[in-house]
Amino acid sequence: MSSDTLYEHPLTEQVRVYLRLEYLLDQINQSSTLTDDGQWRVFFRSLFDLVEILEQVQVKGDLAKDLEKQRAKLETWLDVPNVDTEQLKALLLESRQIQQALLQGSRLGQKLREDKFLSSIRQRFSIPGGTCSFDLPSLHHWLNLPVAHKQSNAEQWKQTLAPLDDALSFWLRLTRGSAGLQPCTVVNGFYQQDVEGANLLRIQVSTEYNAFPLVSGHKSRFAIRFMPFDESQPVPDMMALSLAVC
Image (cartoon, rainbow, N blue to C red; front, side, top):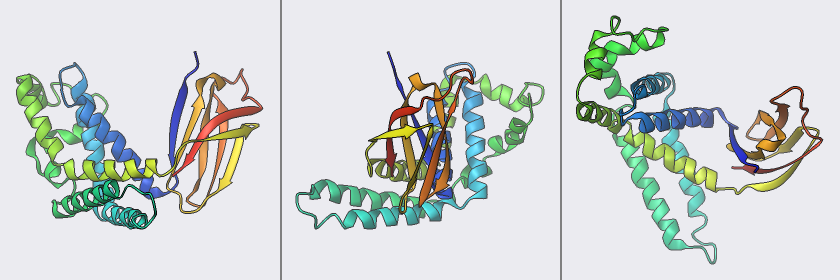
């Protein structure tokens, strides 16, 4: 039985940052129960990676502007016949509320940077094996606290990221929903296309081809070259897949 793999590739640097943040937020949310051995490593490493991105990139202002641009596009649909205006108005209201919460909050990641416990252990996570108990006795103590206590801490840290998580999830949800997957034929493992103002490329391909896509491009043009996962099995001359340019 065949299965498909969905790949996503950013066509702007901004979306590249957004996808990385989404990936880290997903890992933080999935590991924050801290009930399985090793979840704490995923949780803290993802948390610290996210804080590092927020230190390097001014995400709040850019994301607020992108929400505003997205809302302007939605508003143009209000006068289109047969459009579900109630749902559209609900999306516009949600967008305004999310943007307001994002802008009114403190600097993204600031509360995490100011947390004494997180600050005391953060640097050791960048050192191979640096989280051993003799390196971080404070972390070792925290790990042996009751699960409920650790989960409460994790939830408090997560809540400081809620405005970012909500805004990012909303923007990506509408961006992905702006274009559906369409049938596409790839010849000799290569495909290219001119586009206009694109943000995100989505590629759905069967695992039976045993190949993966390498994408290059930007918001006005992209190219996809499929590479064989196993060099003994070449890429098929013709590949049928699905493609969405969002």
